[in-house]
Length: 496
Image (cartoon, rainbow, N blue to C red):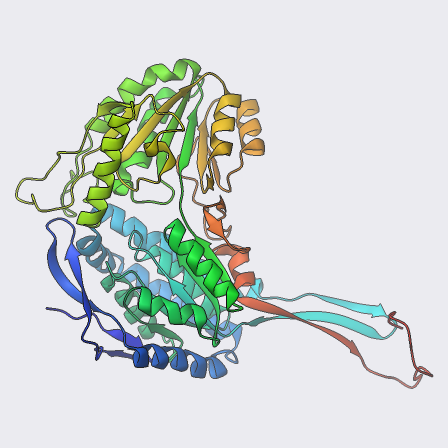
């Protein structure tokens, strides 16, 4: 059985631990690898390696750091399908979806290649007589990332390339459920010319996360995952004087106005609701049909019923299994809650299976109508292929529902009215808004900007905000004396 290695000080090493976590194929729950729970000594070695590497890496010219990212993105593109096969085998994603996971990460690496211009400071000459002021952007030190199972390529690539391009070093703790994908990313990163210790990878669970939150050598922590864990990580990291950005839960609404293009709406809702088995933080899990558009709900359920889960290499499969038996049972429990609490189940995927793979974590597409905000399937993030449909009378009613929700990750509106679209984008209390676009994930030259309980922190992932998160600004006020030396002390706050 393959034991997933650690990456410490440039070496891929087998852990000395006696504690391992099974990595399973979600299609049949067979064990395909074992992830180590790094020992205390190995955690110390990883952090110490990153600290030592920072002393030299921070002095590497920013142009050279950018060239490492250039070589890295070329290798990622060259090996995209190889990475996607590993990713699909341990997440169950379809091959095309797995390739998309890798590609969205590559786009962030391409943004990291632009780091020289993004780290430019500011300057003003002669702010006072003979005095100039200018600023430099400098790296923080050792940074850490804790990533989830659902995007094992994209989300690590949100983190360590941006941090390292800024001159920091990094310790990554990927999800124990699919650790082989980030190890392949690390292998290619070392091949691209990253020096030993610049990137270190440890594996495990809660015991391996805690040192990353408390060790004073680590200056910033980035996390993507659930709300309770995100809250804990944010509180612990900030209590230990670290910067933290924690991307947590979501309940994303799509508002469908009656003047929208029906074909466009239905096709987009199919993919955005059950694609990737609904295991996306930006998935549309609530469709709000306004006025006459409520008549489209039965047809939407019919179209979604044609989407069939299957194996990663099945070209006809719409999506794969959910990640684990525990995840499956949680989703099935929420589906049953929806029925018990009075929602109408138009499409029930509870008993779905794939012949020959009955032990897999399969859930068929599921659609509810008549959902109300007091129902459990509305209040909780399901993270499965389940779409809740609501009917409301007006755009104002839809805005009220969306804004009353505690999450603010993403939302969309489908309409042909510029006035309605502008009103929605202006007044909705959600950080990422799509207009006739179902999943409005920004490209990496913007930032990923969830609001409310979807994000804990001040600065978001990738884009310009990531540069600010992973750096400090140093401002210098400079005077070089000439022949006319000012006479006498200045006892005021002014600069002369």
